[in-house]
Amino acid sequence: MMELRLSVLENRLSDPSRVTAEDCLRYVERGYMWVWEEDSTILGISAGDWRTGGIWALFVRPGHEGRGIGRALFGSACDQLMRAGFRTLQLSTDPDTHAARFYRAAGWRETGRTAEGELIFEFKVP
Image (tube, rainbow, N blue to C red; front, side):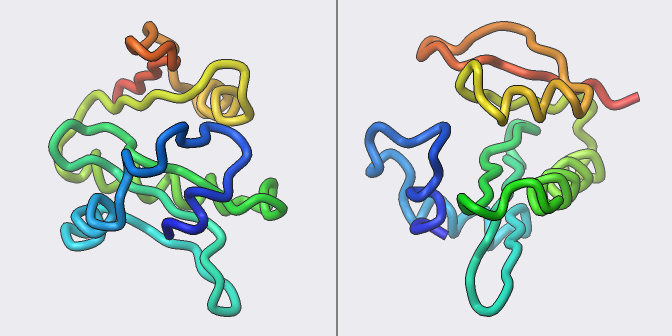
């Protein structure tokens, strides 16, 4: 999973030590991380934050975009958070990226920016 996270072309970690394998393991252990795997290769990951109702991760391996992997994983993360009782979901991403366009197309609304300049998106559960 870490190799995939570090391979993405957008929303790259400027400091890879900020997200560790132990960080990912916490999401896996609580059942809030999903992985798309084909031929023993992880092609996508998604994680929902059980503490905040936020989407913590959504990444698809470069070269495998446009196949519905991200949409399926994103749906799983959102569904789990809604089943956990969250009525407002949130995430952040870099501006002017494929990810920002993806979230807008999925009906998420831009509500501001983080201190680091990322766009903040929210989705209110009907």
